[in-house]
Length: 245
Image (tube, rainbow, N blue to C red):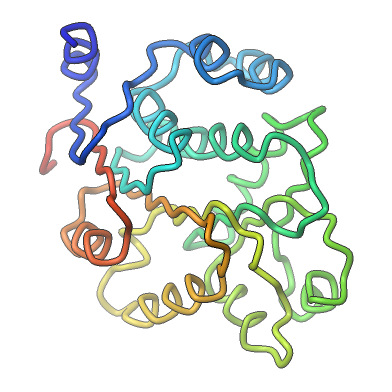
């Protein structure tokens, strides 16, 4: 519609793919159209997020429709909330099924930042959000024999791979419904050729038929785009700003 085109043009939202979900203009629309948990909405507003940023406007509905996503937006444009909000909305509430969402981040610093932001906006909802600090310790905690009182895992690829390589594996990813790779352009950079293999191992370990994948990056990187076209299912690509900046 004209209204949707106007919103996308005004915020420099470029989107490619089939059956594109409409962007949202306000967080309140998440209540009207998607029935967001009222506590989650309150937390978002209390944290000072008045209006969605352009990446949030389009990436949130894409993920809420269960679509695979390649999202590119400059650093500092609100990417963490763009995937955290739909993950928390789709998981609905804590469940003792083991990890149902997995967020991969290139560095421990960034992983800590994501972990903190998730804890802040999920306050009072009961979600259990974990970060792997020491992989050796985690193997006992997250392994197949452990209780499954987890919901969301934030980690670097190396730590996760360490756990997956244990015999038996030190972590079970069979319940993962959302796999998000943040700063995927950094992980795909030359010299990190090993990351493609790591990602393949992580994908294989996420055995649920429900698993959906989203790749976020700061640049519209050619190799990330090509990889997504080959590996993701009916992917929607969203980028913010000038196409090749």
